[in-house]
Image (cartoon, rainbow, N blue to C red):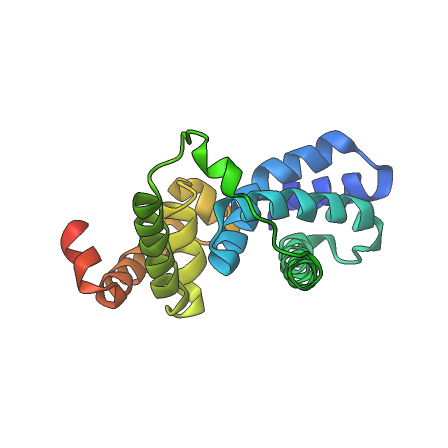
Length: 190
């Protein structure tokens, strides 16, 4: 973390400076999103959990002892939010009776046909599965670059990498990812 980031964390923590915390959100949101999408594989859930993560972080910022460790602390909050959400969701499934929505099936939908959506979800899960199977050092750089669309400068800042080391990680990671993708996805994406 840069000295500027550390100073911002201290301002947000010690004085409650909302502008400083908002800037920290801006600087770290792609990192948190990348970690969550990698873990849960669901875009909407990851977006909700990013918001939950920052709410929890803001509420407990006064407990952060080491400002330089803000990103690691934030990612642990994100992991805990994901775990809590999974527990809550599994409890809801056990407690909520299934209802019959057959009357809603006649309403026109703006979503893709179920077959198309299923295929898209299956492909996303195959890519995420292959991504998760990579060594840890490649997972976040690839997720930040190819899923969240972050540029090299942003990724380098988020992960504390030089441009050269980031380029090497992306190149080697993408090569490994291509090797681990199912054959039908390799031919589609060259």
